[in-house]
Image 1 (cartoon, rainbow, N blue to C red):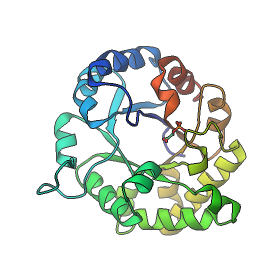
Image 2: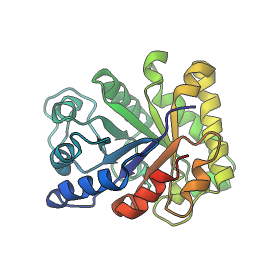
Image 3: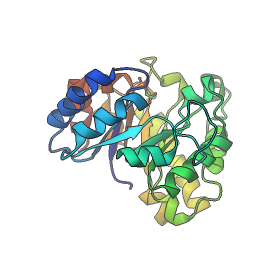
Image 4: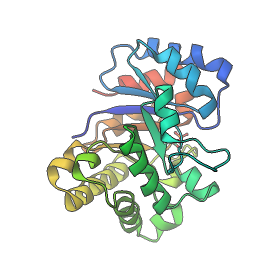
Length: 250
Ligand code: PGA
C-alpha cells in the first residue's frame, strides 16, 4: 500500500509569528516517526514554516494553489511561488474550498495537473455529504470526484498523488466515520485507481482518511487495510494530539 503520511491541515488558524515555534515543536514531538509528517499551513505562514522545518523530517504544504502559471489573478498563488519557497505538498479540492470558494472537479483536476507538473505533491480531497451518504450514493459521488481529478494524468504521475477521503459530515464535527466505513471507501478508491490505471499504481497511492481524526481514534483508523494516513484538522493544532496520531502509525 501507499507510504504512510500524516498531514496537518491548519486551515485558517495560527499566525505567522506563531509558526516557527509551532513547527519546531511538531518536529520535536514527532521525532522518529514511522511515517511522513506534513504541516499544511496558510500561505502567510509558509515562509516561517519552511525555515523551521529545515533540517528536520517535517515537510511543509500549502492549503491551495492556482492552476495558472502567472498573470492577472489578484489574490492567487501559483505552483511556482510555492516551489520557490521550498514547499513540498499542496492540498487540493478540500470540501471547504468546494463549498465556500466554488472549487469544482474541473478546477481540482487543473490544479492537480499543475502541482504535478511543478513537482509538488498534491493531496486531493474527496468526500460525500451526509445527504449523499444517506441516499446510498457515496461510492458514485466519490467515483465521479476521483475520475475527474485524475483525468489526463499519466500512471507515472498518478502514483505521486495523495488522496484524502474526507466525508463532509465528519469534518470538524467530532463525528468520525467508523473505521469500517472509512476503510470501505478508501478500498473503493483503490479499486477505482486499479480500474483507471492498474493494481500496481493503485497500491502505490497513499489514501488518507480525514474527518475528526484525533488522538483517541487514530490508532484504529490507521490500522485498517486501505487507510495509509490521515489529513488532520483540529487535532493538528495541538502538538501533543498530533504527535499521538503520528505515533499511532505502526
Ligand atoms: P478535522 O478536519 O480533523 O478538524 O475534522 C479535517 C480536514 O478538514 O482536513
